[in-house]
Amino acid sequence: MAQHFLLSAESRALSLKDIYKGGEEKAYTEFRKLRWPSTDGEPVCPKCGCLDHYDIPTRRKFKCVGCHAQFSVTSGTMFASRKLSFTDLLAAICLFVNGSKGMSAVQFSRDLDVQYKTAFVLAHKLREALSAETATETLDGEVEIDGAYFGGHVRPENRKEDRIDRREKANQSDRRRVVVALRERGGRTLSFVRKSEAEGVQIARARMVAGAKLFADEASHWDVLEMQFETGRINHSVSYSEGHGKHTNMVESYFSRLRRMVGGQHHFVSHRYLYQYANHAAWLEDHRRRSNGGNAMALLGGALAHPVSRVWAGYWQRSV
Ligand SMILES: [Zn+2]
Image 1 (cartoon, rainbow, N blue to C red):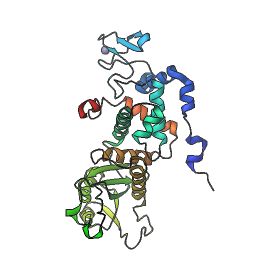
Image 2: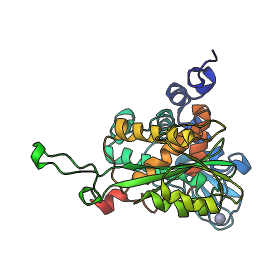
Image 3: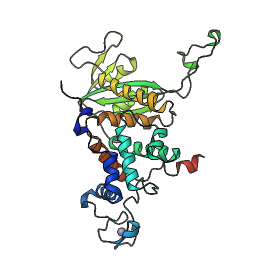
Image 4: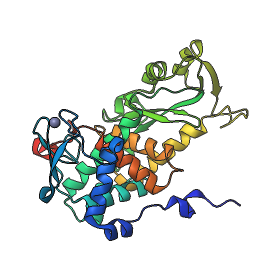
């Protein structure tokens, strides 16, 4: 039997041992290469695009010859006001991509020996960076759509006579949300957080190209999509697959990862941030066959190309 990819040596391309053995200068070089890939790590002024600069080596900064602006490898990126060293940031990214079911902020803070708040914000910034990969992605070929409800748990009363029927809409929490996911077979997974699964109809119309084929379950709100797309429907009360590719197994396995992430790592997630976990699980699912080093460098490159996060910059200063 073929060896599972995650057990192979190719899947392990980066380790904490390598990162700390390499030291700060080597980590800094990686940051430079990924921030300025077109010049192989030579600084480009973020203000005017000038390539000429003076070095300020003691502070790992540069001064632009053209506009005299001072900048560093992280200026204008989500790591702009970083407090962690380059080795610690690289180690953080390594740990983050190694967590195939995600990473709780508590575990992250312990592994990195940083405050919980620092770990919480860093993890959310990384999730924002990886979400940017598919921000404008459209799906083609065979696409599966489905929704799954998360959050808003209503605890049953202790005594049977006090319990309510939690299946009724009136008895459900307003924090309950549905994650709608579209997954292109052999392509990307897109996730969206909404109040009802039926809102997925608009999403499918916006994010699927004409000519793509849609696979969905028997829920009636998907019916209208049959007018627009060639559609394969599967009745889950009868079978999970009818052969000939008529199933939604790929999108189901995405939900399986997200459920394990939410239940096993985070235990509780706020409906406000559910979109971040949903995107994180989609990214892990889509890149599950790439080595951890490949994932770490892709994420770091994405983070260094991503501007300062409006949601997460100064998050604790605003929210406490
Ligand atoms: Zn400049």
